[in-house]
Length: 452
Image (cartoon, rainbow, N blue to C red; front, side):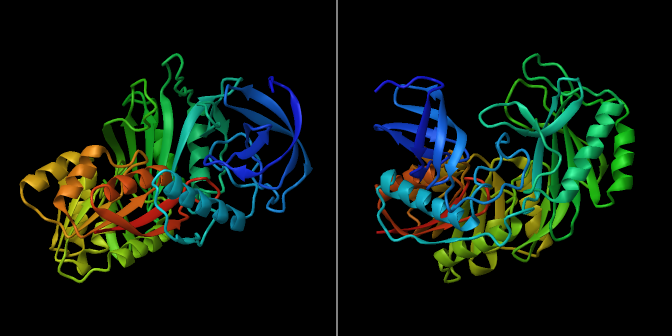
């Protein structure tokens, strides 16, 4: 059957894809429909027709799913942030549990009983970090918000239900300054303009806030006015930076930072460990849920107290330091120099003497440790979305730890990496999904592998 763009169909949503779109089957042809829910009976319009699948847009909800709830965000349909804000949280958890289990069975060929997904205690205002891209509206006014789905078109939004309310107030002040003093937003097409992103981070325990303005240049006219304004209106702001990014890239932060005011770092407490956070250092955005996630990882490890723990992608050291009292020695590896500095300071600040951190790419570090005959008993890996590369997998297997704990933000690569480790003599023993990012399609997974 031939399908054409703009054709209208009456359909039922039978499943949800990994990006949060509803799935429709038209005579075996798959159509993905954003903002749909399983059980919806819809009228849709085909907006893109490819050889093996297409994309549809809801024209009318004829009969809504029982999973649907009232939308509370005015830009939900346009913004690329939340994918599941239109369904109940209970339904969201079931979807995420299924996505993780399907990935392990289909990609990893791992067939074990999964433990129940751990819900988040908060589903709104849980993030401790925000990155707002700047843009320009048709009238030439500087705006900021979030990128539209599958694009770099800025959807104006000064209040987001996932961010602390104070972030929105800070954003409004920065926007007023930009428009009052005619500081232009960066244009990705022309490469002209100054303001690229506003990056805000808050330490939940101390409530300290760090503001980082990502700019194409160091000197911004009247920037001292903005610094004074932010300090006066928001006493919790204790650190303000300019970050320079003048490259034609999708990467948000450049390499150079210039402090305009205050402290080098902000301080938070994670799992009872006091941690310092610099602008580029990795830190879980949902701190309360991260503490519970680390608790699961610790439970999976089941330390005896005499182990050497090797922590790859350690960031500022939070997960490893939370386990340092349970092991003989902790070795952390991270590629970002500032994060390694933070991790070392965090160990010293908390009087942890059995921890060592060094700066290197994970696969290179693994090779060096192997050559140095360092034999970890347990390896902890918390990789980026792309997962572990083949060299790292190979090096970990050669180290022959008794256990590997994998913490992953991507079920597909976690399943792939688990399969690769099973080919090298390990067996998946436990898997548990953790909802770190409510209302989005992202889900964290903790995996225990043991040497066979």
